[in-house]
Length: 169
Image 1 (cartoon, rainbow, N blue to C red):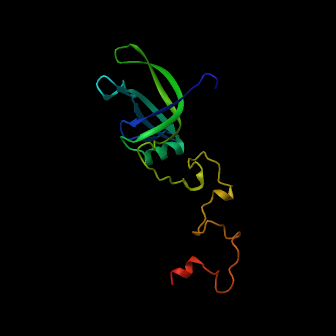
Image 2: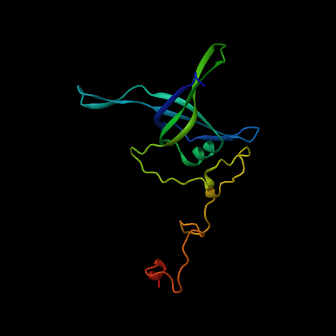
Image 3: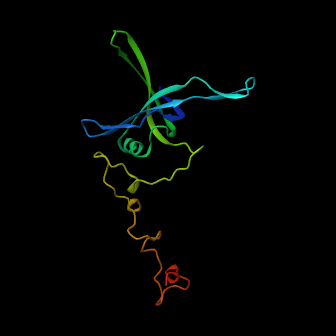
């Protein structure tokens, strides 16, 4: 949409992501990212934190499940998404406005961490609305060989010279 505001935010999760399922069975995760800019104060020779921005974030379907499985309180993350504003009436009857992020993608920040990525089998969404997998390349091979069996050359009698399996004996 033309009026959407894209945003990227880098910060830390304030709590573990909260995963739940809608009445229709769609996975939804909510979490809050706290981001503050550090500035160096030459007068005091110290780093200072500026005001902290807290942004509520929501993600859906497989992304929601992946977030809940992968991230925990304190995780430094990079979140991209769209800002969404909505109004509500508080307990005192005062009209308020809230801004949240509809998450399109999220990942761990690698500035001070190392991450091991595990691809979701088939790389497809597993919710009930996803189309069946028809891509033969999306199937994880059963053999440990990175080469599909139909592409691998036939081994001569006695195996290939220098075959790694020869080293095990």
